[in-house]
Image (cartoon, rainbow, N blue to C red):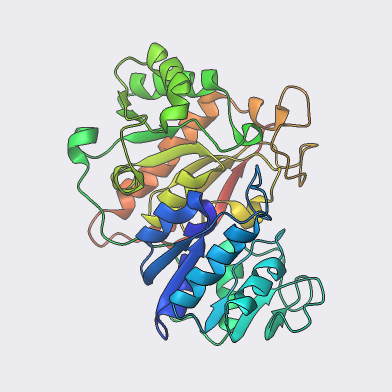
Length: 351
């Protein structure tokens, strides 16, 4: 989900000149449907991207080639992340008859790419992922024409789910354990927020019901929407929130796309400078210099998961109060605040 959402500025740049067919994996398909500028989607599970990876079968490859041909695609802009190669997909797109392909590759691309950016040379590898994607699109001939913020299409009214606006969303789950804060930490945060007079909403998928139960046991008044929202409705819920508290996971980017501030419990297994929520006020919590830094680990390689277990619920609640105070001031008519003008992060690192 996050990979697709951060591609939004690049997609909009392409859509100003061309009809966009977005090729993405099954976990990003719903997010692609929310992006402005996407005309159609092709959903395919790439064996070099997904984890666990699907097997490589000739019939699956042939199916992708057939779908690309049927869509009439004549040009491709491959928006890989910093650790991914565009070359396997470029090969398949060539077989599908795509005549012009742009991508970023550290490896020699031969005739697979017509426009090649070289990461670390003519493509800065320290920039946020939305900017990286947009620069790839720009190299293909689709220049920037807006402020590069993440955006979504129209969203439903979800106020009946949340009993109005002005609440804090806690999203305790993440795709991989290395990026998750503790359930007890979320539970204590919910209790402290409720004691401070804040309404608490819990979000998550069906697989996160046990996490939600832990939070609800500490804060029975919390509104538990675990398993109750598709992605469109989750975006609506986040749009009405004062802040989101989550790890480095897709809903953090979804919150950024609807303009909601994020308390980001960020495990440094990937760089925050690339993957922190983009374009909204962010309070970045967690030891960004921990031993797991840059490992891209799915399971924490350090006993005790200290990069995040060192963060306290009190720190999280203080960050929520700061962000929501800024958000309230920002929403006053005519107000100009630091929060409304910044897109950088405030880092709160525990020793």
